[in-house]
Amino acid sequence: MHPFIKSFTYAYKGIKLSLSQRNMKVHIACASLVILIGFVFHINNVEWCIVSLCIGLVIAFEMINTAIEYIVDMISPDFNEKAGKIKDIAAGSVLVISIIAFICGILVFGKYIVALLFA
Image 1 (tube, rainbow, N blue to C red):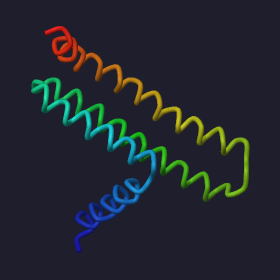
Image 2 (cartoon, rainbow, N blue to C red; image 1 turned 45 degrees about the vertical axis):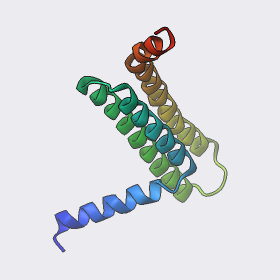
Image 3 (cartoon, rainbow, N blue to C red; image 1 turned 90 degrees about the vertical axis):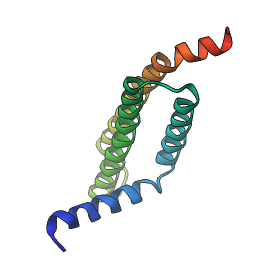
Image 4 (cartoon, one colour; image 1 turned 60 degrees about the horizontal axis):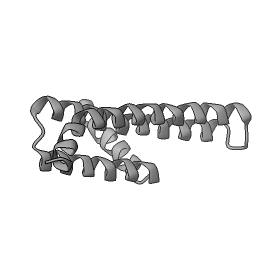
């Protein structure tokens, strides 16, 4: 198999592994709900781009966070205060991008929700 094609196999394995993580399942469930709501409200192409970017960023950050946790656990399997800080910072990055995605969701879907409630 060509090395370039093989790299996709490794990437697929990484995605599959990350999907087994509890937090990733929560992100996927939320993303699925947002996509469904996007179809219900018939959001436009620009809004789909915003929603897609937000979903992709949250999932990518969660994958990076998981990779960092694996690295830290491998390097420092016993409790280590500095290792804990590294993991906390990585987890914090997921929280930050999730909050930004939530705000974008409010900006994209807010007008549709308001129109539904007050129609």
